[in-house]
Image (cartoon, rainbow, N blue to C red; front, side):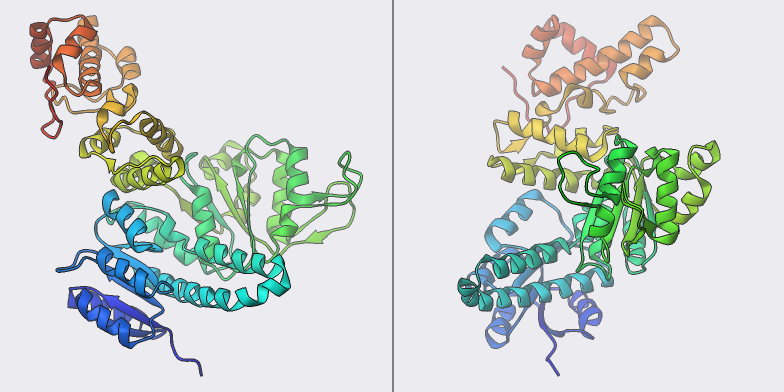
Length: 491
């Protein structure tokens, strides 16, 4: 009988150690330490596959300890558990300690167990890779490619941890429900506005399922013609496609025994709805230009940008197809309804963009995060990424402030308590006198200009064609005040 993999749990709070041990001890040999010095001694005396370490501890921090582990025991998988999500700490952890994964408190036992199993697999796979590397020089590149593909697949297996959210996020309940659905081989309908991360949720469910060793494919149906969609999904016989000498294998065949995620099913034509109904109920289909019936064992996950239940009521979506796809349902919240998650989403996305574009940054200022959090983000996560990309390109300092934020986002800030929170379009379409409606817009322009110019009142007055006295009078009149956290830049 093979010995259980050994984990080292490090936390300065005994009750946290006891909780982690209770969640993991059935499948792992668990060593515990209350500080970095005791943990180092245990590392010297034991063969440890993975470490779960609290970040904030007296003495050496988790990052400092794991940086030392990286030097002395580089194969050991290093995982940080933290209740804090500062970008500076995250960047330091990645750069200094080579952290494989972050877990946020409070963690769920299933989440901890999944992370531990993946870490043990990654450790073993790394050792297997080292052993096989000697053989690969005689076997060519084929074996090397297979091992590397397995390593990439395993890293993708940290699925639900990639769905970033705060500890008190409204998304927590949805993620926990998705974890439960992932283990059961049933269709799942994932609804949500464009840009809410339906593809990421589907991928996470695949890698948390029993099909994780097999392929995951996704296809966005929106904007595709029926002919192109059928060819991509069902495949085509030789001679159907001009210049194609062989049969084209469709995604349903490629995804057999794995998972097929079809996004944008709310846009399907009546003909394609009929094709999908047969696929969902029978698992069968015919390639384009062929007469033979093929079957697939792919698990079907679907996504829609609208409420398909209402589409059924409106007669634009088949009722039988809806019930075939929606054995279980998930609804992803738009960013405006999970604004608690914006700091960790923005800081993490900025760190990724900085690495991609090789431009060092330390993150966003608190005031910049405050302004970003006051906007409703109709474009959801892609719009946030685009805004951060633009800010990164224009940034001159390592910390990005609110002066870099787009004007329409700055104007959405509700810091003027005396005025109702309404955008320019709402003001133009609202009731009230011309004078009142102009003043609402004027207050927003004042706030946006001062923020963009870092509250340099001389420059703001010059740009707006006002005197310093006139500007101050308008600020007092509208209740526009300088945030306490903003650095004053007077001439």
